[in-house]
Length: 298
Image 1: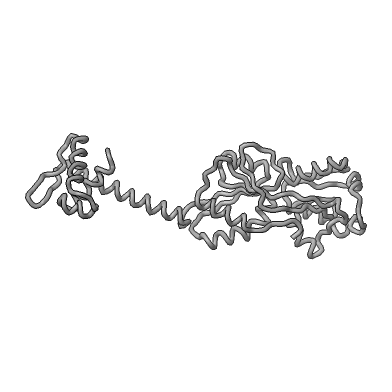
Image 2: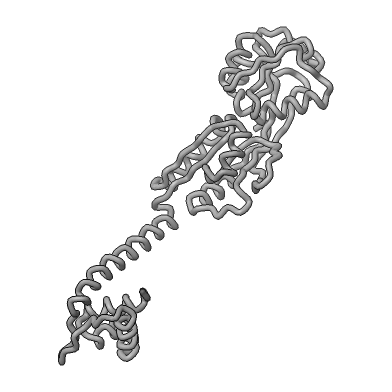
């Protein structure tokens, strides 16, 4: 059924005459007559009874008028919903972020986003970088935010900041009192690491392997806060994001090891499928994330 013809039929029935419908639609009356005739031919039914003062719908016309009203009401609802979606008066935003970004960087950014777009429903999943790449590739989330490097195909990747991993120990640890601690001491120490799939773990392992360093022992935990607690108890050494340990360093709960060898930089990445067509809520978040400056050592 031609919806343009249906629209003309609906207007003629509503106005009760072709001439008034033509005025309402800003078109010529003969054009409306041709479109109604085409619809009647398509349906094989007469839709109007012509009278001297106008037209009256037939029984079939009255039935069609009911459906037409419902159709155009739904069209109006759809247009209104799409306008609200476009103007960020509705919609959803699904994010996935690595532990460092999700726990320490995103909260103020999400608060600012929510304040600007209160009608958008936001969900955030915190996971390791390997899991985030999977979620993005499977389109289970709109945007992923993680720490580089990332070696996964099929993703668009953009740098939106830098991070610094620093080695920390408990204030009472013997290494805390030394200056210019050599990296080689790790061969006699316990190194606390995140679980496999963590970008932090991968960056640390690749860095130490490049330096020819093999830790004496390793201790694996799946939570940055748990690692900080174990380090603070004096068990060993951990490389953690400066964003994660700044409060403890500031108040004396943890101490960074002295020397440039105990610091390494990495990038913060925004990732999404290469062919993604982002929704208005996701585009608004992407623009906001890019405006924020995340730099190592801040």
